[in-house]
Image (cartoon, rainbow, N blue to C red; front, side):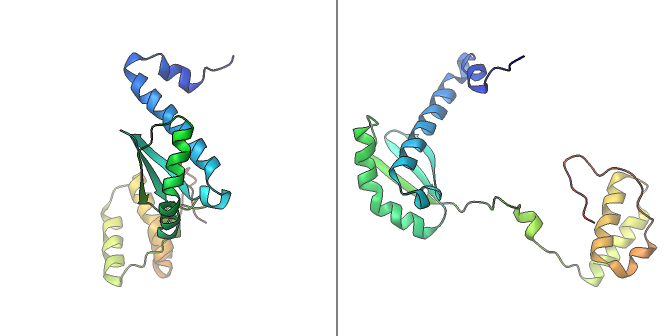
Length: 166
């Protein structure tokens, strides 16, 4: 059985018609902007919004925004030629998140001795629960000297959507 596309499902709801139309406009503009810009620059730009003749672009960094500022008048003329009523191009810098790993996995936290002592005391005072197991895992990673005093890992699965570090 073939599932219907999300666009068709959303377009059947009358209240969502403005949202669907706006998403289609932004997608069409994104394609035109991507085709107008050089490939290496196009990868660093996203169309964020189009309202009242103003096209809002997000640049990955300030140097990309500076290049776009120089290209904005010709981009605006190009879009007018494509029958889009673009009066101005607005730029905002919004760095892209890394696609290979989330920022949270790239960070390293170091706990003070006082904090580790407090976390161990908290762990010892907790009843058996998934939260206590998670705290034990955190303490194993950050306090390997006292990890032997913690109860051994059980064969329980980690929570869904989370990877267990080994």
